[in-house]
Image 1: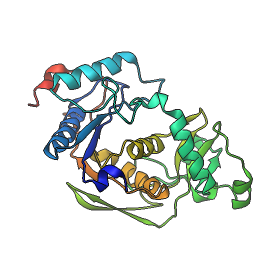
Image 2 (image 1 turned 180 degrees about the vertical axis):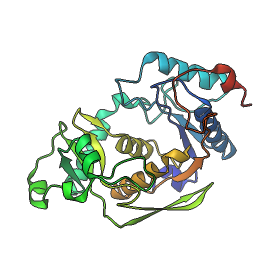
Image 3 (image 1 turned 90 degrees about the horizontal axis):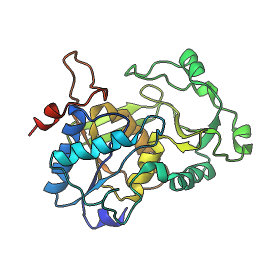
Length: 270
C-alpha cells in the first residue's frame, strides 16, 4: 500500500494524450476527476500520456493545456509546475518503464511475441465487446523456449493471462463489473519492439510511482482497467479505485473523435 493511501490522502490524475484536440467527452471526464479530487481535499496530478510520438505533437500539447486551463481546471503537480514524482511526461520516462517490465520478465510473467497483427486478426476470436481480436493461447511459445529467451527491449513482450479467470472491478459509479480472460481480453502487450512501453504498462507504472489512489476515466476503458488490475497485482501493489464516466457520443451515436477543435462546445459545459 502506498504511503499516500495509508495516510488516506486522495491522489487523482488527469492523463490526456496530446494526439489530437480535446473533445466534449474528455472535458466531461477531466471535470469529474477535478471535482472528485477537490471534493476529497486531495491532490490532482497532470500527466501527459504522449508515448505515441508519431501522433503526439507540440501543437496538440499546447492546445490541450490551453483548453484545460481555459475551463478553470488546475492541478497540484504537472509538467508545467513540477512536483515530487516527475517527470510528468511519459515520453521521457522510458527507463522507469524498462525497470518494471524487467521485473515481470524475472517473475516469468511475460513472453516474447513474434506474431503480427494480421496473424492475430486471422486466427484470434473477436472479444465479447467485439472491439479487439483475442491473442490465441496457441500462439504462445513453449515454456521451455520462453524461459530460455533473454530479455531484449527490441522485442514485443506480452503478459501471460490465465484463460477463464474472472477479473472483478468495483467501480464507484457502475458498481461491480466482471470480466473473463479469454472472452473480454487475453494476453496483452506490455512492451513494444520499438523500445517503448505499452499503454497498459506505462499507465500502471506511473499510477504506482505517482501514488494515484483513484483513476477517473471513460467507460470505454473498462477492459483496460481490468487488464491493468492484473498488472497492479503482478507488481504486488494495491489497485487504485476506479470511477468510469459515461461516454459522450456524437449526433451519430458514436464515440467522439479528436479530429477537430471546438472551443465553444468545450466551454459551454459549465
